[in-house]
View 1: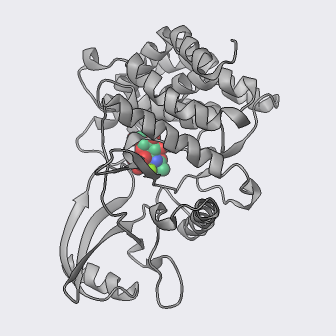
View 2 (view 1 turned 90 degrees about the vertical axis):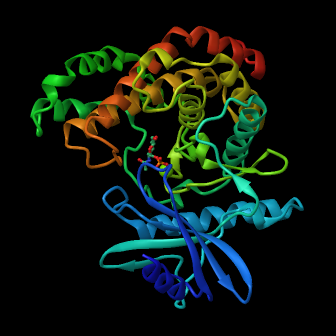
Length: 367
Ligand code: GN1
Ligand code: MG
């Protein structure tokens, strides 16, 4: 592996000797490594990433999206007198590409944003508020970005209706003979469907606008400053595409306000933590409030429920089609994830009124 990475460093014009390689294990899709390179006595840190080309069918276009997005954000920061340094920066090959494609894979290298740390779970309300503000600010900075110029990296990514339809088709086909095991979960998703497709209906009737959204707003996609503890930047830009504000808000809540991990097997531990919900909302909403329509504000909580049901449908679909999409650590991992998300969706459903009350209070929008 060291030899391979040394070769990659050369291709990306990074001089020096590879000193260490550590796997960063918190993504479910790509393979990511924390790599230190020593050059003339100095140690520099990079993130080497091998993209999952089963998931991302057109990785070159993703890198084009990312280049455009990061440049847009860096220019914006600079125009208000802030440093461009917190924006992700990718290494380039000798022929000026921000990726390297070979038979065995698709590689990219970014500089490690110095003095930052990520969290897979976070109960520090101050940090959650700060993460909320970072995702809100991300959204606002891309408000004037030309959505039409973005390549849709995964079509129908947060199209909940289509996700559920695909699941039901595979339930009928039962390609791996696993459907018998999951009758209860399929039934639950069917019951949740009418509310979970509500956002689709509001898009169809043009009551909700599409914006440029991040679409993968897990708390571990935020880099926090090691010293101040504040959110410094948002990473993982592979799925930046047109979407709904409710998707970004909702997916963040789904992950960060769950008292348990996304794949917790003991469902009694899975609860929606309203204090965490409030903290994230307090950070996010003021950043976006100016530009949101009343309907957008009023559908933020529904976004949390919707994203949770959608993830349940995606995990279950992967389970019954043979675990090809998400990385799994054991047989049945995707089913455990499904059950956890369904329990959480129930929590969301029960707390919709309470979530709406908090959003009304923070935004000043009457419900
Ligand atoms: C995947 O790779 P990661 O962990 O950032 C997935 C998200 C899911 C998430 C669930 C491209 O994200 O949509 O919400 O797993 N990304 C893609 O943990 O499918
Ligand atoms: Mg991701």
